[in-house]
Length: 210
Image (tube, rainbow, N blue to C red):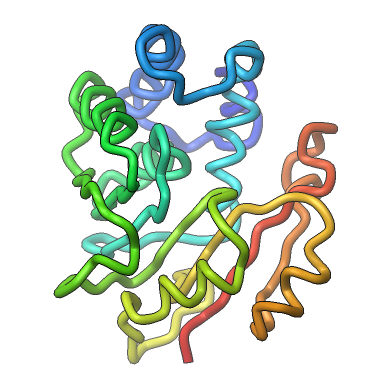
């Protein structure tokens, strides 16, 4: 928990309490449904919460914005971002229903009112549009963009720190993956945001809609 406060210092008491509650809740649910690697629980706040908040280190989400977390798994990056931005709407989508049960139960336990869930694949989602799609280590960039692009509404007013497009967290050598996607994402090294060895070769990518 302290590692979160090292890099972000503008939380309300409610937000601090919500972040603090996550560890025990995930530890408990992890004994029933394996949503996080057992070894990762020892570094839960760094490997999952802080990693998710790399998005918040670069972008702001406005009141009322619609954000979809594609392939949310147990709720990352969606739940940490929903705590960070309580006035933004987060729609967490996954093809594995039992993981969404964890998301629903944990969101309820900490009093999050800005999260909805959907058991579906991205290509099955109809009649919904979002300002932003976020994702963490779900699929190759070319697939993420193919699934996401039809779901993103282009905002007419561009704002420097307010995203409108696809944001994803990825690791490793991305040269071939980016080339194969045909996209030209903006790329940030997360280790330069959070000076921790864990974030070596981990990146934040952003493809704005045009």
